[in-house]
Image (tube, rainbow, N blue to C red; front, side):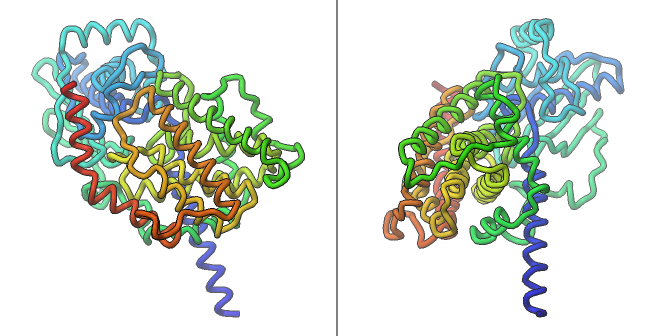
Length: 443
């Protein structure tokens, strides 16, 4: 009886820990996350200038890490036809409210955009690359009347690490929060969960505790189709479609799932004012892990519980892989998120643990190496490719087909395959990332 009680305690603790991670990582944002973070830094620096000295900025300077510059260079901004990091900072500075967090660009008006265009044309904003910075690093300096305020966001997209007013620190973080090592704070302090633990979590966590995932799917589905009906995601009542007996219908559903995900990404990269629920700091990853799974569930007539548990699995797998490879890297986040999507697909198709391991191995044996060359409209193409691969991997897995462990970097199971994927990114692709940005800056 003692052993059984201990096992139940460990399961309850794991579910509790992973649920906290989900709630922390799946948050609502507006627009692409990197320019939103830059706008937040701009809004914070300028608000301090206004509050302390009643001044408007005369000049601004932006210093950012390699991956922030890369991801923000070409992406559209919500409620504006402007693009890029400097534009995001100026728009945030002009009208953004720091308390709005990553939705800081929600209040952009045509008048604000017109003012931003003047500032940018007059070249009153400088942009600099910060070598050796954390992957997520944005520092905005605002100067006026001999005064300077400096806001620094680092490690997480909405984490204000420092605020200086004329060189005096204003942010009083405890040492354990401020002294974060290079990289991201450990969201898994007890170690990364295994696939067995993530599957058990998705299967056993209290349904009411993960109902917020249905809301996340609904928000992200609206990007693919603004007329999307709330009821069709929260209550699905049609008869369940079985893969073996209705293969054609299932494949049509998976094709629709792929198209909807790409459509949502394109709308977001073009600057849609609709919000998105992000995953691991990325709206595209949030879309990838929710929209296709929700579409397949809707087409199959899956239950509300089946959808919620599939979303839990797809989301926690994506978060875990992103934590291991780094939130921003040279490897496309849509691909790693789609590994989670494939797991969600398998669950909806009736597969179990063995099929999930096969699906992950299929994904790693297929699209590993797809590069991230910043956020822009063609991210929709990558999501289309990644989700299509997720669908193929899931169907193959349910049919009993998995990439063998002697195929390239594929491991003996999903955990080993992700170990190898992590090594590819962390050991093998740093030079690739530098080359990508050099091409983008000099072409």
